[in-house]
Image (cartoon, rainbow, N blue to C red; front, side, top):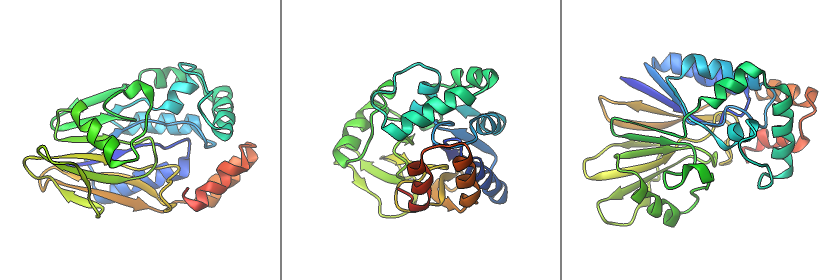
Length: 242
């Protein structure tokens, strides 16, 4: 079976459609969504509806949570706050209800899926360092934990009791007695310097996990953001991938 994992769409319909088209090209059988359908971008309703249609499981992200008024926006930056308020005004009641059904985490086979961290999913903390990753290995018991949230893809590997380390490649083959913490990147707003959408591809026969990049019609997204009067900072950062 071929599986696609994707996260952090952030109301970017063009990016989502490009990734889903790539799913078709790769002939993927099943898809899992790791959170943040909304926020930042101009198409919250279309993205929620499309994600609901294609993904087998849907996880809650912090922007989704904020759009439901389940958390305050004080710790969001100014631009994110403006986008969240815009999203609240434009999100349909039907899609509000859809987001409310999203899960905080999900486990199947040898995978643990969560938007932020396995340690405390509801705190929306980030994993930026190997020390933070090492701590989080203690909070999941599956071989692989997949996360999103920071929009920065990485593959971290750990062998038994040794300290974890960063894999300097975009692909890894699962090995016995090794465990993995993988950030699958962002579909709608990458922040690792590469402005192409990112998702994770898994071949369960070959036991290979691969981060894949997909270009999309960014100018179309930016034009719609400008029309919606979303912050210029958010429009510009799509090009930078930061």
